[in-house]
Length: 178
Ligand SMILES: O=P(O)(O)OC[C@H]1O[C@H](OP(=O)(O)OP(=O)(O)O)[C@H](O)[C@@H]1O
Ligand SMILES: Nc1ncnc2[nH]cnc12
Image (cartoon, rainbow, N blue to C red; front, side):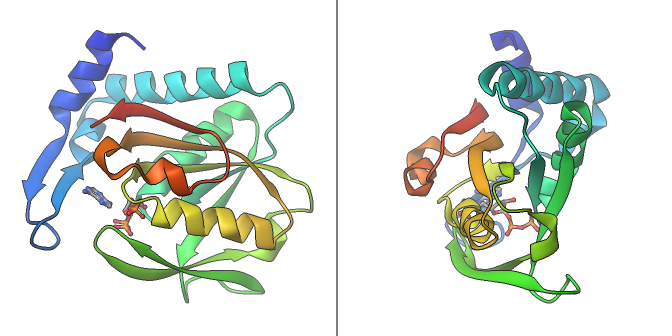
């Protein structure tokens, strides 16, 4: 993706001071979805990155509740991989693995259906944004609990100043650095 495209997408992001809490500068990626050419460009970039980096098949793309659901299924479809959701606690039926975590503006609990990740499945975890890395780290913990293998974490945006990638146990790819 050219620097021009990256700057174009950056210029579409909303920036909201003191949302959802005082002291947080919230980066809103929903305006990007007003331009399908921008969505197409960023999905194509991520899929190209994954196909050129991973020689072995990616079995499952895991998306994080809720904004990760906007990107995960599109990427999974293009890779010919399965998609599985990590959801906030109490939303998924059946036997679930569970992880408690802290994120930039609060605490939460994530779950995944154990049946979604087969032993040794090669997993890519996808989300819209990494801040502290708490959410993605908890998702990685869930994949471990299911005996899967996280081969990469992928984010559309990364808040570089929080250095959230340091808590993750696999390579990290982010398209837009803020
Ligand atoms: O790196 P962290 O500090 O963990 O923060 C990043 C997470 O925070 C946001 O999700 P949020 O829990 O607000 O949920 P949403 O997607 O439902 O808005 C964002 O979509 C990431 O999942
Ligand atoms: N600053 C931020 N903007 C948007 N989403 C977030 N999730 C965690 N921190 C965030």
